[in-house]
Image 1 (spheres, rainbow, N blue to C red):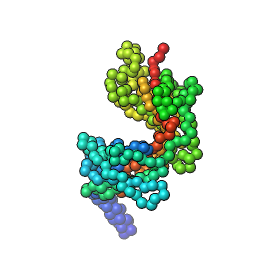
Image 2: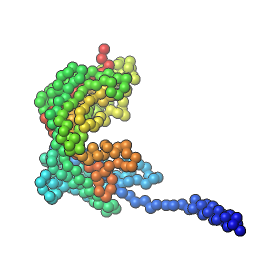
Image 3: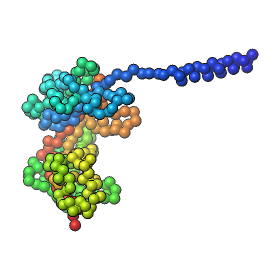
Image 4: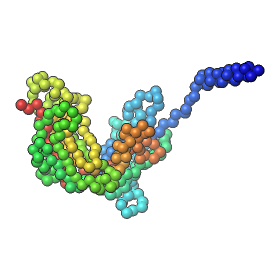
Length: 319
């Protein structure tokens, strides 16, 4: 009898497992809004991206997920104030679905250091979302140096005609050849839990004119050194700003200088939001977001220091 009962129990368990495997468990999916805006002190919003999350079988592209027709508002709060005031309503680009901007004429002073900012987005088909951040102060006591010559760089503010020339060459590893360094007052950056960053931006002429993708030498050089040239003058890379983030000091290595010709080097201070995001970049539990009611990031940087911006001319394939 006991053996029979035991067999019945086993059969019941097996039958239950078979049935449970055959039943499809479905979870209802609901779109969530996504907002991304990275702006700079002293400027307005050039591009704010507003979209929705995508389903499993959807094509993941912004043209497919971008949200048009949203009402997106920017608010500002002074350091010692308790209330936000409306700055303006963003407009949507006619040819870019889901990309919004605020004309500089509507925000003449731009984002101001020490001021709090809030973005709110409303759309009939989605929940209201919002995000807040604080515009950080610029880096202090910046000293930028050419490591090969030992010279301290002259900023654009100090002398608009000043240009530093560096001769590009590739190293064997990522950090064995260093061209530039930057020191700054890191204590307030650390205490405020912020970060420092640099960007290398190719001048517009080199960014968009395909004739300059052959470097500022000749097509003969292109034919003679196809590998070396294309490594850092690749069409897929060319025109994209190179950006890295640090807390205490900055060292710029050879792999950052793949843009030949004239470049602009910018040192910036980021807000707490971006540092929090970077700290969770490789977190398996998820990315940091300061967007309430959705996902994304609203972050501000500040490069308004007198010694934040420099001109550098990158030469390569020299004899």
